[in-house]
View 1 (cartoon, rainbow, N blue to C red):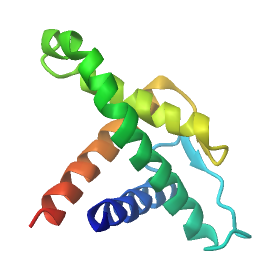
View 2: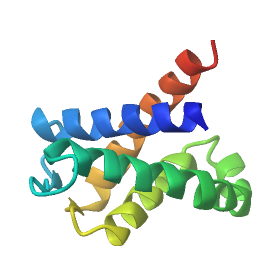
View 3: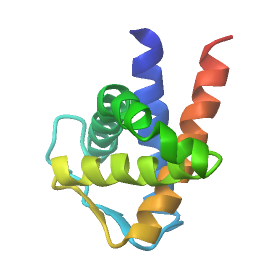
View 4: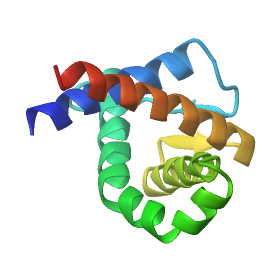
Length: 123
């Protein structure tokens, strides 16, 4: 449970960095400054939603799309990550994504950050 919460904090930090440095112009987060944790609470909330979506829906999508993943030698996983990010944007009204390309790049960056967090937290 602690590992999941630390991963949520890492994902929230990645969302903050993506929007603060404007890495992906089509990815926007509207922070809630009146929330319990202020502006940073919004990023933690979005990180939590993305973590839960990735933990629950992600394995199902990866299993159902296994033939496409094998056929494309794993490149279809980028589409799955984009779908998970799009699903997160659909759940919360604070996250907006302008297009499919933005979702693919954002999903790729979040997948790399999640993988790096898993590698660090496993030690």
